[in-house]
Amino acid sequence: MNFDVLKQDILNKVKEYYKLYHANKQTQFIEGKTKINYAGRVFDEKEMENLIDSSLDFWLTAGRYSEQFEKNLANFLGVKWAFLVNSGSSANLLAFYTLTSPLLKERQIKRGDEVITVAAGFPTTIAPVVQYGAVPVFVDMELQFANVDVTQLEKALSSKTKAIMIAHSLGNPFNIKAIKEFCDKNNLWLIEDNCDALGSKYDDKYTGTWGDIGTSSFYPAHHITMGEGGAVYTNNPLLKKIILSMRDWGRDCWCKGGKDNTCGCRFTQQFGSLPKGYDHKYVYSHFGFNLKATDMQAAIGCAQLEKLPEFIEKRQKNYQKLYNGLKNLSELHLVETQPNSQPSWFGFMITLKDGVKFTRNEFTSFLEECNIQTRTLFAGNIIRHPAFDSLEKDRDYRVVGNLEVTEKIMNDSFWIGVYPGMNDEMIEYMICKIQEFCAKKK
Figure 1 (spheres, one colour):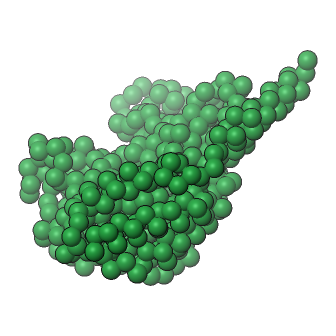
Figure 2 (cartoon, rainbow, N blue to C red):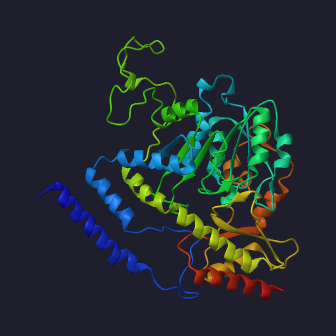
Protein backbone atom coordinates (compact mmCIF):
# COMPACT_ATOMS: atom_id res chain seq x y z
CA MET A 1 0.00 0.00 0.00
CA ASN A 2 1.16 3.56 -0.77
CA PHE A 3 2.40 5.29 2.42
CA ASP A 4 0.41 8.47 1.72
CA VAL A 5 -2.77 6.45 1.24
CA LEU A 6 -2.11 4.54 4.46
CA LYS A 7 -1.47 7.75 6.38
CA GLN A 8 -4.70 9.29 5.12
CA ASP A 9 -6.58 6.15 6.14
CA ILE A 10 -5.11 6.45 9.66
CA LEU A 11 -6.08 10.12 9.88
CA ASN A 12 -9.61 9.35 8.70
CA LYS A 13 -9.86 6.77 11.48
CA VAL A 14 -8.68 9.39 13.99
CA LYS A 15 -11.40 11.74 12.80
CA GLU A 16 -13.95 8.98 13.19
CA TYR A 17 -12.63 8.18 16.68
CA TYR A 18 -13.01 11.83 17.72
CA LYS A 19 -16.63 11.91 16.61
CA LEU A 20 -17.46 8.61 18.31
CA TYR A 21 -15.61 9.21 21.58
CA HIS A 22 -14.76 12.83 22.31
CA ALA A 23 -17.65 14.60 20.57
CA ASN A 24 -20.16 12.33 22.30
CA LYS A 25 -18.64 13.14 25.72
CA GLN A 26 -20.10 16.63 25.53
CA THR A 27 -23.02 16.10 27.86
CA GLN A 28 -26.04 18.32 28.36
CA PHE A 29 -25.67 20.89 31.13
CA ILE A 30 -27.65 19.98 34.25
CA GLU A 31 -27.87 22.68 36.92
CA GLY A 32 -26.02 21.76 40.08
CA LYS A 33 -24.77 18.46 38.68
CA THR A 34 -22.63 19.38 35.70
CA LYS A 35 -19.38 20.88 36.98
CA ILE A 36 -18.50 24.28 35.55
CA ASN A 37 -14.70 24.32 35.47
CA TYR A 38 -12.79 27.59 35.53
CA ALA A 39 -11.01 26.51 32.32
CA GLY A 40 -10.61 23.58 29.97
CA ARG A 41 -9.51 22.30 26.59
CA VAL A 42 -11.65 23.14 23.57
CA PHE A 43 -10.67 21.06 20.54
CA ASP A 44 -11.97 18.96 17.68
CA GLU A 45 -10.67 16.30 15.30
CA LYS A 46 -8.12 18.68 13.73
CA GLU A 47 -5.89 18.74 16.83
CA MET A 48 -5.98 14.94 17.02
CA GLU A 49 -5.23 14.54 13.30
CA ASN A 50 -2.23 16.88 13.59
CA LEU A 51 -0.98 15.02 16.67
CA ILE A 52 -1.11 11.64 14.95
CA ASP A 53 0.36 13.05 11.74
CA SER A 54 3.33 14.35 13.72
CA SER A 55 3.75 11.10 15.64
CA LEU A 56 3.89 9.12 12.38
CA ASP A 57 6.94 11.18 11.36
CA PHE A 58 8.51 10.09 14.68
CA TRP A 59 10.79 13.13 14.63
CA LEU A 60 9.85 13.71 18.32
CA THR A 61 11.82 16.93 18.97
CA ALA A 62 11.17 20.33 17.35
CA GLY A 63 10.48 19.99 13.62
CA ARG A 64 8.17 21.09 10.83
CA TYR A 65 5.14 21.74 13.05
CA SER A 66 7.29 23.75 15.47
CA GLU A 67 8.55 25.95 12.65
CA GLN A 68 5.00 26.41 11.38
CA PHE A 69 3.66 27.30 14.82
CA GLU A 70 6.41 29.85 15.46
CA LYS A 71 5.78 31.47 12.08
CA ASN A 72 1.99 31.54 12.55
CA LEU A 73 2.18 32.92 16.10
CA ALA A 74 4.59 35.66 15.03
CA ASN A 75 2.26 36.56 12.15
CA PHE A 76 -0.76 36.64 14.46
CA LEU A 77 0.94 38.93 16.97
CA GLY A 78 2.66 41.05 14.35
CA VAL A 79 6.18 40.44 15.68
CA LYS A 80 9.34 39.45 13.86
CA TRP A 81 10.16 36.35 15.88
CA ALA A 82 8.39 33.87 18.14
CA PHE A 83 10.08 30.84 19.70
CA LEU A 84 8.39 27.76 21.07
CA VAL A 85 9.34 26.44 24.51
CA ASN A 86 8.06 23.66 26.77
CA SER A 87 5.93 25.78 29.17
CA GLY A 88 4.87 29.29 30.06
CA SER A 89 7.09 29.12 33.14
CA SER A 90 10.04 28.22 30.89
CA ALA A 91 9.07 31.16 28.69
CA ASN A 92 9.40 33.50 31.68
CA LEU A 93 12.67 31.84 32.67
CA LEU A 94 14.06 32.27 29.16
CA ALA A 95 12.81 35.85 28.83
CA PHE A 96 14.49 36.92 32.06
CA TYR A 97 17.75 35.04 31.54
CA THR A 98 18.02 36.55 28.06
CA LEU A 99 18.48 39.91 29.78
CA THR A 100 21.42 38.53 31.80
CA SER A 101 23.53 37.98 28.67
CA PRO A 102 26.95 39.68 28.57
CA LEU A 103 26.15 40.58 24.96
CA LEU A 104 23.89 43.33 26.35
CA LYS A 105 26.95 45.07 27.87
CA GLU A 106 25.94 47.92 30.23
CA ARG A 107 22.26 46.88 30.05
CA GLN A 108 22.99 43.32 31.20
CA ILE A 109 21.10 42.37 34.37
CA LYS A 110 23.62 41.25 36.98
CA ARG A 111 23.20 39.66 40.38
CA GLY A 112 21.99 42.29 42.84
CA ASP A 113 20.26 44.37 40.16
CA GLU A 114 16.59 45.13 40.71
CA VAL A 115 13.46 44.21 38.76
CA ILE A 116 10.13 45.91 39.48
CA THR A 117 7.11 43.59 39.67
CA VAL A 118 3.99 42.81 41.73
CA ALA A 119 3.37 40.24 44.48
CA ALA A 120 -0.20 39.43 43.40
CA GLY A 121 0.38 37.04 40.55
CA PHE A 122 1.77 33.70 39.47
CA PRO A 123 5.08 32.69 41.08
CA THR A 124 7.01 31.99 37.88
CA THR A 125 6.81 35.66 36.88
CA ILE A 126 9.07 36.27 39.88
CA ALA A 127 10.97 33.00 40.32
CA PRO A 128 13.62 33.58 37.59
CA VAL A 129 14.58 36.91 39.17
CA VAL A 130 15.14 35.26 42.57
CA GLN A 131 16.80 32.16 41.10
CA TYR A 132 19.36 34.28 39.26
CA GLY A 133 20.19 36.38 42.29
CA ALA A 134 18.58 39.62 41.19
CA VAL A 135 16.25 41.51 43.53
CA PRO A 136 12.49 41.73 42.88
CA VAL A 137 10.96 45.03 44.00
CA PHE A 138 7.26 44.67 44.75
CA VAL A 139 4.78 47.48 44.16
CA ASP A 140 1.08 47.39 44.97
CA MET A 141 -1.94 46.76 42.76
CA GLU A 142 -4.95 48.98 42.10
CA LEU A 143 -8.30 47.29 42.55
CA GLN A 144 -10.21 48.99 39.73
CA PHE A 145 -8.36 47.11 36.98
CA ALA A 146 -6.68 44.42 39.14
CA ASN A 147 -3.29 45.47 37.81
CA VAL A 148 -0.09 47.20 38.87
CA ASP A 149 -0.40 50.61 40.52
CA VAL A 150 1.73 52.70 38.16
CA THR A 151 1.83 55.61 40.60
CA GLN A 152 4.31 53.60 42.70
CA LEU A 153 6.88 53.05 39.97
CA GLU A 154 8.93 56.15 40.82
CA LYS A 155 9.14 55.05 44.48
CA ALA A 156 10.40 51.63 43.37
CA LEU A 157 13.13 53.06 41.13
CA SER A 158 16.74 52.96 42.27
CA SER A 159 20.20 53.12 40.71
CA LYS A 160 20.09 49.31 40.50
CA THR A 161 16.79 49.04 38.61
CA LYS A 162 17.24 47.32 35.25
CA ALA A 163 13.80 46.01 34.24
CA ILE A 164 10.08 45.65 34.82
CA MET A 165 8.66 42.14 34.56
CA ILE A 166 4.92 42.05 35.02
CA ALA A 167 1.77 40.22 33.87
CA HIS A 168 -1.47 41.38 32.30
CA SER A 169 -3.75 40.22 35.10
CA LEU A 170 -6.41 37.69 33.98
CA GLY A 171 -6.24 39.09 30.45
CA ASN A 172 -6.84 42.74 31.38
CA PRO A 173 -3.92 44.80 30.03
CA PHE A 174 -2.00 46.84 32.56
CA ASN A 175 -1.47 50.53 31.87
CA ILE A 176 1.01 49.95 29.05
CA LYS A 177 1.30 53.64 28.13
CA ALA A 178 2.46 54.61 31.63
CA ILE A 179 4.80 51.64 32.04
CA LYS A 180 6.32 51.98 28.58
CA GLU A 181 6.98 55.68 29.11
CA PHE A 182 8.56 54.91 32.50
CA CYS A 183 10.80 52.23 30.95
CA ASP A 184 11.84 54.46 28.06
CA LYS A 185 12.59 57.37 30.39
CA ASN A 186 14.76 55.24 32.68
CA ASN A 187 16.32 52.91 30.06
CA LEU A 188 14.67 49.82 31.54
CA TRP A 189 13.84 46.52 29.90
CA LEU A 190 10.16 45.52 29.80
CA ILE A 191 9.12 41.86 29.90
CA GLU A 192 5.38 41.38 29.39
CA ASP A 193 4.13 38.15 30.95
CA ASN A 194 1.32 37.62 28.45
CA CYS A 195 0.47 34.09 29.63
CA ASP A 196 -3.06 35.07 30.73
CA ALA A 197 -3.69 37.57 27.96
CA LEU A 198 -3.03 36.06 24.52
CA GLY A 199 -5.14 38.06 22.08
CA SER A 200 -5.66 41.08 24.36
CA LYS A 201 -5.11 44.47 22.74
CA TYR A 202 -4.04 47.87 24.02
CA ASP A 203 -4.45 50.81 21.64
CA ASP A 204 -5.31 48.20 19.00
CA LYS A 205 -1.92 46.47 19.36
CA TYR A 206 -1.53 43.03 20.93
CA THR A 207 -0.24 42.78 24.47
CA GLY A 208 3.10 41.03 24.67
CA THR A 209 4.38 43.09 21.72
CA TRP A 210 4.83 46.46 23.44
CA GLY A 211 7.84 45.54 25.55
CA ASP A 212 11.21 44.08 24.68
CA ILE A 213 10.06 40.47 25.23
CA GLY A 214 6.63 38.86 25.59
CA THR A 215 5.77 35.40 26.90
CA SER A 216 2.85 33.00 26.48
CA SER A 217 1.67 29.76 28.09
CA PHE A 218 -0.14 26.93 26.33
CA TYR A 219 -1.12 24.95 29.42
CA PRO A 220 -4.64 23.42 29.07
CA ALA A 221 -6.19 26.26 31.10
CA HIS A 222 -4.93 28.99 28.79
CA HIS A 223 -6.26 30.64 25.65
CA ILE A 224 -4.88 27.90 23.42
CA THR A 225 -3.21 24.67 24.49
CA MET A 226 -0.74 22.06 23.40
CA GLY A 227 -0.78 20.31 26.79
CA GLU A 228 2.42 21.85 28.06
CA GLY A 229 4.08 24.59 26.06
CA GLY A 230 4.91 28.25 25.85
CA ALA A 231 6.46 30.91 23.65
CA VAL A 232 8.83 33.87 23.81
CA TYR A 233 8.61 36.67 21.25
CA THR A 234 10.51 39.82 20.36
CA ASN A 235 11.29 42.35 17.63
CA ASN A 236 14.85 42.92 18.82
CA PRO A 237 17.47 41.08 16.68
CA LEU A 238 20.06 40.91 19.45
CA LEU A 239 17.52 39.54 21.94
CA LYS A 240 16.42 37.03 19.28
CA LYS A 241 20.00 35.75 19.03
CA ILE A 242 20.30 35.41 22.80
CA ILE A 243 16.87 33.75 23.15
CA LEU A 244 17.84 31.07 20.63
CA SER A 245 21.16 30.45 22.34
CA MET A 246 19.70 30.32 25.86
CA ARG A 247 16.82 28.06 24.78
CA ASP A 248 19.12 25.61 22.97
CA TRP A 249 21.80 24.68 25.55
CA GLY A 250 23.57 28.07 25.34
CA ARG A 251 25.16 27.19 22.01
CA ASP A 252 26.54 29.82 19.65
CA CYS A 253 25.40 27.94 16.53
CA TRP A 254 21.98 28.77 15.08
CA CYS A 255 21.53 25.68 12.88
CA LYS A 256 18.10 24.07 13.19
CA GLY A 257 17.83 20.54 14.55
CA GLY A 258 19.13 18.00 12.02
CA LYS A 259 20.92 20.72 10.00
CA ASP A 260 24.65 21.34 9.77
CA ASN A 261 26.84 24.23 8.58
CA THR A 262 24.08 26.78 7.90
CA CYS A 263 26.65 29.56 8.23
CA GLY A 264 29.02 27.92 5.77
CA CYS A 265 31.99 28.35 8.12
CA ARG A 266 31.46 25.60 10.68
CA PHE A 267 35.17 24.68 10.94
CA THR A 268 36.92 27.99 10.15
CA GLN A 269 36.14 30.40 13.03
CA GLN A 270 37.88 31.42 16.23
CA PHE A 271 35.95 31.40 19.53
CA GLY A 272 37.50 32.31 22.88
CA SER A 273 40.64 30.28 23.56
CA LEU A 274 39.32 27.22 21.68
CA PRO A 275 41.45 25.84 18.85
CA LYS A 276 40.81 27.71 15.63
CA GLY A 277 38.21 25.92 13.54
CA TYR A 278 36.59 24.20 16.52
CA ASP A 279 33.19 22.77 15.48
CA HIS A 280 30.75 25.69 15.70
CA LYS A 281 27.89 23.33 16.59
CA TYR A 282 29.62 22.76 19.92
CA VAL A 283 30.62 26.29 20.82
CA TYR A 284 28.72 27.74 23.80
CA SER A 285 28.31 31.48 24.29
CA HIS A 286 25.88 31.29 27.25
CA PHE A 287 25.07 29.09 30.22
CA GLY A 288 21.77 28.03 28.73
CA PHE A 289 19.04 25.44 28.99
CA ASN A 290 17.17 22.96 26.83
CA LEU A 291 13.66 24.42 26.81
CA LYS A 292 12.42 23.21 23.43
CA ALA A 293 8.98 21.64 23.00
CA THR A 294 8.24 18.54 20.93
CA ASP A 295 6.83 18.64 17.43
CA MET A 296 3.79 16.71 18.66
CA GLN A 297 2.96 19.55 21.03
CA ALA A 298 3.45 22.07 18.23
CA ALA A 299 1.15 20.05 15.95
CA ILE A 300 -1.69 20.51 18.44
CA GLY A 301 -0.80 24.18 18.79
CA CYS A 302 -1.04 24.78 15.04
CA ALA A 303 -4.66 23.61 15.04
CA GLN A 304 -5.43 25.58 18.21
CA LEU A 305 -3.97 28.79 16.80
CA GLU A 306 -6.47 28.66 13.92
CA LYS A 307 -9.27 28.73 16.51
CA LEU A 308 -7.80 31.57 18.58
CA PRO A 309 -9.89 34.43 17.07
CA GLU A 310 -13.16 32.64 17.87
CA PHE A 311 -11.84 31.69 21.33
CA ILE A 312 -11.09 35.37 22.05
CA GLU A 313 -14.55 36.44 20.90
CA LYS A 314 -16.26 33.83 23.09
CA ARG A 315 -14.21 34.83 26.15
CA GLN A 316 -15.17 38.47 25.65
CA LYS A 317 -18.86 37.62 25.28
CA ASN A 318 -18.86 35.37 28.36
CA TYR A 319 -17.15 38.07 30.42
CA GLN A 320 -19.64 40.71 29.35
CA LYS A 321 -22.60 38.47 30.20
CA LEU A 322 -21.22 37.87 33.68
CA TYR A 323 -20.48 41.56 34.15
CA ASN A 324 -23.96 42.62 33.08
CA GLY A 325 -25.55 40.04 35.37
CA LEU A 326 -23.52 40.95 38.47
CA LYS A 327 -22.71 44.65 38.18
CA ASN A 328 -25.63 45.73 40.36
CA LEU A 329 -24.64 43.62 43.37
CA SER A 330 -23.57 46.19 45.95
CA GLU A 331 -21.49 43.68 47.90
CA LEU A 332 -19.07 43.01 45.06
CA HIS A 333 -16.34 44.89 43.28
CA LEU A 334 -15.93 43.81 39.65
CA VAL A 335 -12.84 44.46 37.54
CA GLU A 336 -13.21 47.19 34.93
CA THR A 337 -11.66 47.06 31.49
CA GLN A 338 -8.39 48.98 31.22
CA PRO A 339 -9.04 52.16 29.16
CA ASN A 340 -8.01 51.92 25.49
CA SER A 341 -7.95 48.13 25.61
CA GLN A 342 -9.79 45.04 24.40
CA PRO A 343 -9.06 42.24 26.86
CA SER A 344 -8.97 38.61 25.87
CA TRP A 345 -10.21 37.65 29.32
CA PHE A 346 -8.71 34.67 31.14
CA GLY A 347 -11.06 34.87 34.10
CA PHE A 348 -13.75 36.93 35.84
CA MET A 349 -12.45 38.36 39.11
CA ILE A 350 -14.73 39.25 42.02
CA THR A 351 -13.65 41.11 45.18
CA LEU A 352 -15.74 41.50 48.31
CA LYS A 353 -16.24 45.12 49.28
CA ASP A 354 -15.16 46.24 52.74
CA GLY A 355 -17.76 45.68 55.43
CA VAL A 356 -19.67 42.77 53.88
CA LYS A 357 -20.92 40.20 56.39
CA PHE A 358 -19.36 37.13 54.79
CA THR A 359 -15.90 35.93 53.89
CA ARG A 360 -14.33 35.01 50.58
CA ASN A 361 -14.02 31.39 51.73
CA GLU A 362 -17.72 31.23 52.64
CA PHE A 363 -18.54 32.55 49.19
CA THR A 364 -16.25 30.20 47.27
CA SER A 365 -17.30 27.20 49.38
CA PHE A 366 -20.92 27.88 48.44
CA LEU A 367 -20.04 28.13 44.76
CA GLU A 368 -17.93 24.97 44.85
CA GLU A 369 -20.87 23.13 46.47
CA CYS A 370 -22.93 24.32 43.50
CA ASN A 371 -20.32 22.76 41.19
CA ILE A 372 -18.89 26.13 40.15
CA GLN A 373 -15.09 25.98 40.23
CA THR A 374 -13.26 28.98 41.72
CA ARG A 375 -9.68 30.17 41.91
CA THR A 376 -7.82 32.81 43.92
CA LEU A 377 -5.60 35.28 42.07
CA PHE A 378 -2.79 32.72 42.14
CA ALA A 379 -0.31 33.45 44.94
CA GLY A 380 -2.36 36.33 46.36
CA ASN A 381 0.73 37.83 47.96
CA ILE A 382 3.82 35.83 47.01
CA ILE A 383 6.00 37.20 49.81
CA ARG A 384 3.72 35.53 52.38
CA HIS A 385 4.46 32.06 50.99
CA PRO A 386 6.91 29.55 52.54
CA ALA A 387 9.27 29.98 49.59
CA PHE A 388 10.10 33.46 50.91
CA ASP A 389 10.93 32.26 54.43
CA SER A 390 14.58 31.80 53.46
CA LEU A 391 14.84 35.26 51.89
CA GLU A 392 15.71 38.45 53.73
CA LYS A 393 13.67 41.58 53.14
CA ASP A 394 15.65 44.59 51.88
CA ARG A 395 18.46 42.27 50.83
CA ASP A 396 16.89 39.55 48.67
CA TYR A 397 13.75 41.55 47.83
CA ARG A 398 12.27 45.00 48.44
CA VAL A 399 8.69 46.12 49.09
CA VAL A 400 7.31 49.57 48.28
CA GLY A 401 4.73 50.62 50.88
CA ASN A 402 2.51 48.10 52.67
CA LEU A 403 0.90 46.36 49.66
CA GLU A 404 -2.54 47.23 51.01
CA VAL A 405 -4.46 46.34 47.85
CA THR A 406 -2.41 43.19 47.36
CA GLU A 407 -3.47 42.13 50.87
CA LYS A 408 -7.08 42.89 49.99
CA ILE A 409 -6.83 40.70 46.89
CA MET A 410 -5.22 37.90 48.90
CA ASN A 411 -8.06 37.93 51.45
CA ASP A 412 -11.15 38.96 49.52
CA SER A 413 -10.75 38.17 45.80
CA PHE A 414 -11.43 35.11 43.65
CA TRP A 415 -12.28 34.40 40.05
CA ILE A 416 -14.44 32.14 37.92
CA GLY A 417 -14.03 31.06 34.33
CA VAL A 418 -15.06 32.54 31.00
CA TYR A 419 -13.41 29.95 28.74
CA PRO A 420 -14.92 29.09 25.33
CA GLY A 421 -16.28 25.74 26.50
CA MET A 422 -18.94 27.54 28.56
CA ASN A 423 -22.40 28.02 27.13
CA ASP A 424 -25.12 30.55 27.99
CA GLU A 425 -26.81 28.13 30.40
CA MET A 426 -23.62 27.85 32.44
CA ILE A 427 -23.15 31.62 32.53
CA GLU A 428 -26.73 32.18 33.62
CA TYR A 429 -26.42 29.51 36.31
CA MET A 430 -23.28 31.17 37.74
CA ILE A 431 -25.00 34.56 37.78
CA CYS A 432 -28.04 33.04 39.51
CA LYS A 433 -25.99 31.33 42.23
CA ILE A 434 -23.87 34.40 42.94
CA GLN A 435 -27.01 36.52 43.20
CA GLU A 436 -28.60 33.89 45.44
CA PHE A 437 -25.63 33.87 47.84
CA CYS A 438 -25.53 37.66 48.15
CA ALA A 439 -29.30 37.82 48.74
CA LYS A 440 -29.07 35.25 51.54
CA LYS A 441 -26.31 37.19 53.28
CA LYS A 442 -28.06 40.56 53.28
